[in-house]
Image 1 (cartoon, helix red, strand yellow):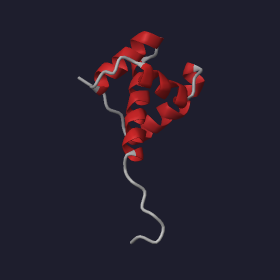
Image 2 (spheres, helix red, strand yellow):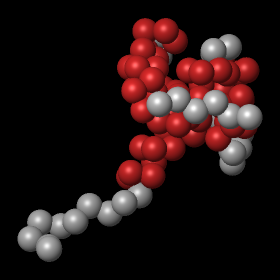
Image 3 (cartoon, one colour):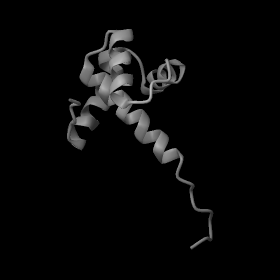
Length: 83
């Protein structure tokens, strides 16, 4: 059963990722891009935690943030002047 965190807890976990893991989010996102291409968030979190010996809650926060940012990038930005 996946664990879900409140938005506040998620933000704190994401903020502490570089300090706790020694890597920035961009490095973790690159690792996910190079990873085995798993589809389910829980599978990617498990892979990341196992592959890099991360606590599962940090792996889950990284994958959740990765998905959120990818989703946000896929939304087209309105052009200036368009209403």
